[in-house]
Each structure stands twice: as C-alpha cells, then as structure tokens.
Length: 268
Ligand SMILES: Cc1cc2nc3c(=O)[nH]c(=O)nc-3n(C[C@H](O)[C@H](O)[C@H](O)COP(=O)(O)O)c2cc1C
Image (cartoon, rainbow, N blue to C red; front, side, top):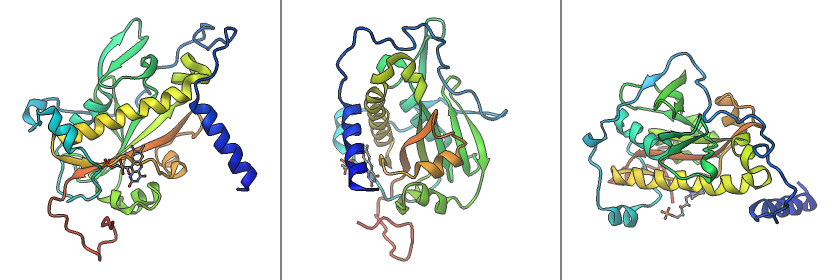
C-alpha cells in the first residue's frame, strides 16, 4: 500500500464517520418504496437447536453499579465447560428479539439499533459447551435457536488465525463473530447507513460485556479480525455480508494460571 492510497483510505474513513450534509433531493431505497430486506438471515441448515430460557436458574448479579464497575476486558480463560444456558443468556442479552413491529417491519431487540434495522448476524465457534458439539454455529434470533453449520474438533489454530494471531481467544468457550448484512441498513439509511452501523455495533458489544460480567464470565471485544478467513468459514460472500467484529467469552481463570509453555496463554 503506498502512502497516497493510505492517505485516501484515511480520508474516506473519516468521511464515513461524519454526518453527511442533508440533501433534500436524496432518497433512500425505503423512500423509493423498494422492497424491504429480510429482518434476519434465514436458517442456513435444515436442523436447528432449541435454547433454554430459564435464566432464573443462572446466578445473575443484580447490583447494576457493581456490574458496571467490575466490567473489564478478560483475555484469560480456564477452559472449564460452559452451560448451554449461559450461551443462551449471552445470545438473548445481545440480539434477542422481544417484539416484531408492524407487518414484519422491524424487530425490537434487547439492544437498541438505528431505525431498528438490526443489520448484524451472530455466528459462533463453540468449544466445550454442554450438550453441543464443538464447531461453527449461527444464531436464529427470530426463534432464539442456533444451528450447527459444521461440527469440528481442534478449533484453536483456526480461532487464532481468524483473530489475527490473538492466540488467547482460542481458549474461549465461545467466540462470537458479528457480520454486517449491509443492505438491511442501507435500504433505510443509504449514505448514512455505515455511520449508524458503527454506532450500533457498540451497543451489542457493551451488552455482551455487561451480560458476561453479570454471570461471572469474562470476554473481550476484538476489532482486529481476519475477515477473509472468517467470511469463507461462515459461507459469507464478503460483499453483501461480511465479518466485522468478534467477541470471545470464556470461563474466567481466577488463578490467572499463566503457563508459558501453553501457546494459547495470554502474555501481557
Ligand atoms: C471496538 C473494540 C475493539 C477491540 N479490539 C481488541 C482487540 O483486537 N484485541 C484486544 O486484545 N482487545 C481489544 N479490545 C479491548 C480493549 O483493548 C479494551 O476495551 C481497552 O483496553 C480497555 O480495557 P477494559 O475493557 O478492560 O476497560 C477492543 C475493544 C473494543 C471496544
């Protein structure tokens, strides 16, 4: 990449964060009455898995200020088994659908989102989660189910590569990966859509941090990803839908057992 190209990219990046000056002539596809995209991606496989919702059985911290004050990025995990109820709780707290508005016009979820477009899809790599095979999964928010895209063992090397050699993430029971289905927000917001999407991703991430903290789990937002390998692994075309953000969550290693011989240990 030459300097001129980099400077141009930086300029374009800044422009996409700025609120464009409103043009009264501008019309989004929604204004033009073009068909609305689907509220969520349809199932990719024929079999789906029910998730438990008896969240009252989780030891949820209810001192909100304590949750706020103890939230931090956790990158050291014990690799103990995680329950499917914990997985279900994290999915519910970050993308759960509470209501459908209008004639399938919008989903109202546990996170806010500009225009309620909810342009993200949630994918996961699961390891050592009760009653689920290790492998690649996709969340179905409309029914609060998951589907296994591919059961696979020995996922640590792939996770490390997918997160740009951030090897510590390979010990997380769940690596959440968020894709953007771009047209879902472009339909409504057109040239403003990408700015809105950046803001929206923060809500998912913060809910994930707080939800994980509230049940004693640890996680960390990860912006530095290898989108190309993730797109391929999760069968995304990389244009209409592309990987955007990751969030490993694991059981906290309270003893902070750092083993220098372990290639997946987090070394500060
Ligand atoms: C959008 C975003 C991207 C991040 N990307 C990474 C990352 O790629 N690798 C990493 O180790 N931490 C990452 N973090 C975690 C930050 O480094 C962390 O939030 C920051 O150092 C403050 O620490 P705290 O979360 O414990 O308060 C990211 C956090 C956010 C919100």
